[in-house]
Length: 593
Ligand code: TEU
Figure: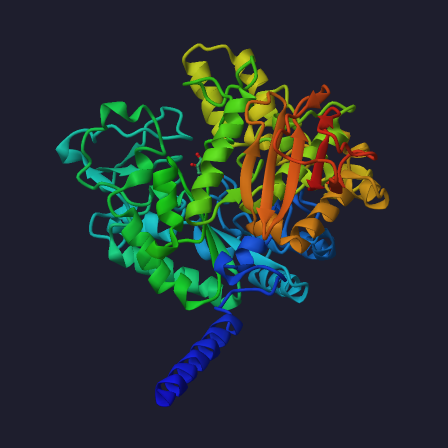
């Protein structure tokens, strides 16, 4: 009896000891935010705020009108001052710039306009010294037609690089139809005379698709990724990665595809085998993070980030950002506006899905989008300030890692070019040519593009009110500077405690200090409200209520079931934030209940 009791006590002691050990030993990659239970699967990349830099437009150091790495180096302290944890750097590799670096001709070299490898090393060191991690943009679905692999492949079918690409031999007749974006004929095959065959390009003909079905190509890519990891980069954003696997039997396109990237091109037969292989060969070797530019519905996107599958860490999806365009017309905004309630439901669907598995991202802009202020807020002088802060509050209070685009922190807005000659973007120019070829309404097209074109988000950063907004000393910048730089610029906002910039800094700190905003549950409130995006975030018995009025008129939220009596303001964009659920135009407030 006594013996058994001693045995039982000893066992209990061992169990307690074991439990203590397992809770004190944090798995790799976990951080030490207080009061977050380990069951939440903490990771540094879930807690990070990502800031995207489009190097071409950030800071020019040599007066050629094009941003460069030395320019970024000169702004390291600014980036640090924002409080962000990680920078996503759009491509800086050698490129003929048909698609501004998203067409790479040498993956292990720096684009000449941007500087040299030693500039890169210095920049990386500078970020590291400031505790800011760096994410590289990996464009490996395709390369540039100037890449030596492609040049060699084009010379002969016997080239060792021929099978690095997808070809259709002309003796078999015309290839089965595939559509392309960034191609004036919207045709994804281009004939190459020396090899008497057609090569495949889902994007421009200057962006031939790499043949991922070839193991030798995949090994080259992994080797190249290791090269950057050995330099000390902290992760990768995988561009258009969902398109990398192709059905090489090239069956006729299924009738229902209807040009839908997500449902057809993004579902190649071996896509996830390759993601798992890449994880084993590259990602698992270092403490890094990865994000997929994923396409398709929840089920498809989830495959990238389901931890059990060991592929990537985060994914971003397009359903919400592409909302409100007319069907079958290239990014043509619906003149009737967009259905706000449906838009909220899209976010709810994805946020709920990522709550069960994986991890999502949250963004309202990037280099493929117009400025968030113009598209989702209100860029009139009256509402620029409030609606910028409101959108920032949305990004920073949602569940998922925030990806914030440079310039949004000062409320930059669309430049709204009148003339096609002002544009640079291959996407816009291709679509303009297509509308023209069909005898379409070019004026209507250009008007629509004032809202949605990518170049709106690529104009130079507005640092101050001096010549060229302090971006460049050159007389011509690669894209024009938005004339509103005289009032909308970093220098003016830095000094003003109530500026959009300082609101951004403040809310970044709030997010970092408040685990509820990172790990807390997310629940939509007053779902049918036509003006207000409202949700709760809760964790460990504490609840925050985020309220954002997306409209220029006062709006009331139905808060039935929530007790606002003792509500405490955590942050708000008005001097006197609302605590009663009645919101002023573009008001945003986060309340602790
Ligand atoms: O974009 C991938 C993509 O699928 C595009 O269709 C994207 O949806 C489009 O640009 C939106 O207007 C990536 C890059 O982010 C983009 O900048 C590149 O142009 C593209 O790949 C080709 O590399």
